[in-house]
Amino acid sequence: MAVWLSLSLVLTRTLAAAQEEPTATRVGQVTVVSWPLQRDIALELARLAGKSTEWPGLGQRTPGPLQLIIVPDGRHFESLSSGRAPPWGAAVALPGARMILLRADQGDLYRTLRHELAHLALHQAVKVRVPLWFDEGYASWAAGEWDRLDALELNLAVVRGGVPDLRSLDGALRGSATTAGAAYALAISAVTELARRNPSGSLDPLMARLGSGDDFAAALLATTGLTVSQFDIEWRKALRRRYSLATWLLAGGGWGLLVISMWLWVRVRRKADLPRRAALDEGWEVAPELAGTPELDRRQEP
Image 1 (cartoon, rainbow, N blue to C red):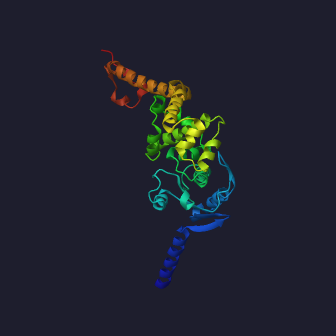
Image 2: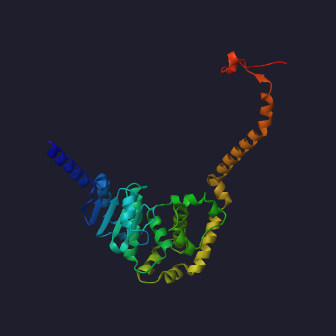
Image 3: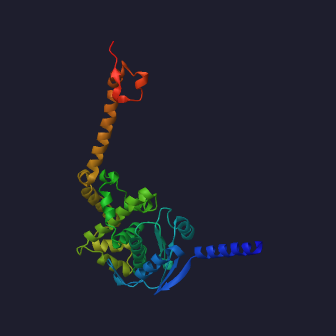
């Protein structure tokens, strides 16, 4: 009997371990690796990843062979990314390895996947080195992450003119979760400004230059008439014009001030009323038999 129980326990543990192991499945040109609980969503993401897609400035492109790894949580993500992504990250793309690592427990998986696919598409088309702010700003644009720009309207640092230069923006993109949130919004605003500065109003001319082998500074000068330093200054000027105290108030900052003001007023009022309340309490006595019945409390006349 003991032998059978022992064998049963070993078999149970073996099956449980097998259920926790990831498996690889081929979906078209995409090899997707997933854990059992994430298998269904992983297959759906793999199908989407393999589709031909229209990318801003790059046209219609098929991603080609790639590996998509869907991990269940942050522990697996940190282990597999080997420090290539910050702890708060939802995904990481490795263009050289044609690989995307994506957390299943973070955010909008479809939009996150598109963001990472945009990185692969950009590096597939452009072989020259591009700044990190452009890389992340382009991927955010391509993924339709326009709500990031809305967040800038309520960012007091931006409203007060505290906009980092482009070099500092690269560092902020790899900072804390709070810092990175604003940094990604600023990066997409910089890429939007690049498109606006070209007569075509698009990224097409810039991408064509980069794709032909021009370095980033030369491509920027040819398509906007600005050096990197000049563009940096003009971009920050444009941000200050767009995000001001007026836009902050209209976006809801004024309501926040009102709530805080009301809270402070109530606290001050209560503090001021303490002596008066203490004075009103003087002279009140409660008969022992009436204790606990507030409606029968009465004032004792001298």
